[in-house]
Length: 350
Picture 1 (tube, one colour):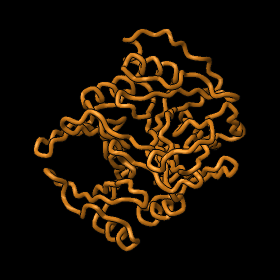
Picture 2 (tube, helix red, strand yellow; picture 1 turned 180 degrees about the horizontal axis):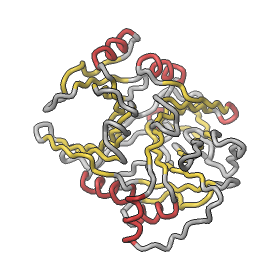
Picture 3 (spheres, rainbow, N blue to C red; picture 1 turned 120 degrees about the horizontal axis):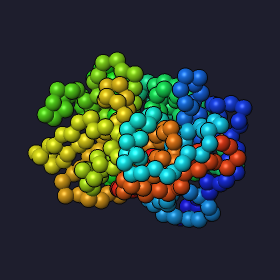
Picture 4 (cartoon, rainbow, N blue to C red; picture 1 turned 30 degrees about the vertical axis):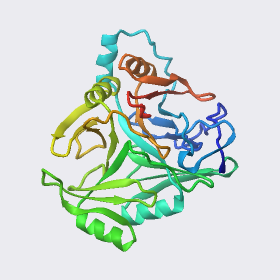
């Protein structure tokens, strides 16, 4: 048995208001801001675990507790938005909302080992890092460009926890590279694990390969020309594909970019996003014939999405069969508004 300290998402979060580049992280909870004079700044508070007390759990079930995923936007001096909108107005508004996938949050057992692998083997940059020793966790943000313009990774390391259960629901991340074979050779030279050698995807011509990072997270390498968004996919498994497509279209205003059924291998995929696959990060939803539920484990946490109005977002989520885990409103002490929800399969996302 292992004692693990779980710290609550407290109301005492106090990021500096003198800088729009502030960050507050609490065991998978991050508050990051993007400063731009030409577009709204987005902030994110992603609670990977709600923490309240010291307790012991089996290693395979560590941190299997309810969490929340919150997309946050700097509100400036705007007054609180009215929530009295009709269903028709809400569904029409979400299509016009200014949204972008901000970052994906998950837990790792050795932060320095993972940073080394991502930077040396996958070509990412360490964007920032924050250690909170009194609360026994460290966060690191990595990606291929600044957080205010790129989809990035937020890693969480909890002191003393060296292993997590990835579960069966999480699939993989996708990274676009110009030469899959060369990338695989580099990964092998660095001691990385290749689970699928480079070659064309089944039923298509795109060259791909699969690798695993030191914690067992799978990455699909896709051969693609120069792209503004190399970190291009998050694949999650769902129990009812049409239900999920309907939810992400209505609640998040995502577009169904493409859908492909593969009866030979008994699965169907749907690509959802706010822009084309070759220029923006997308959500890949996978339905395996006859499988309606998955074990989500305790490793993967959530995706953060920016929105212009959390109040209207919450209304749309409610009428789209989503579950609000935090009502929209300002963070304590600062004029930043947040909301949180789960999709029909229980994935933490906003």
